[in-house]
Amino acid sequence: MAQPNYGFAKRQRELAKKQKKEEKKRRKEAESAPQTEEGAQPPATEQQTDTPQQ
Image (cartoon, rainbow, N blue to C red; front, side, top):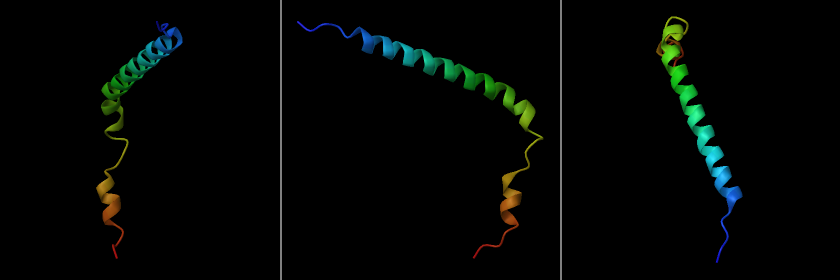
């Protein structure tokens, strides 16, 4: 009979926990980002139209 690989199971739990934490961090940043970045960055389309295309 095969023995359970506890190290592998622990690593999988740690990776899942880390991924969940990062996803939560991204959601929080996305909620606060639109309020601070709206006026800070000019639209990218204006910069691209100034250069002539060949």
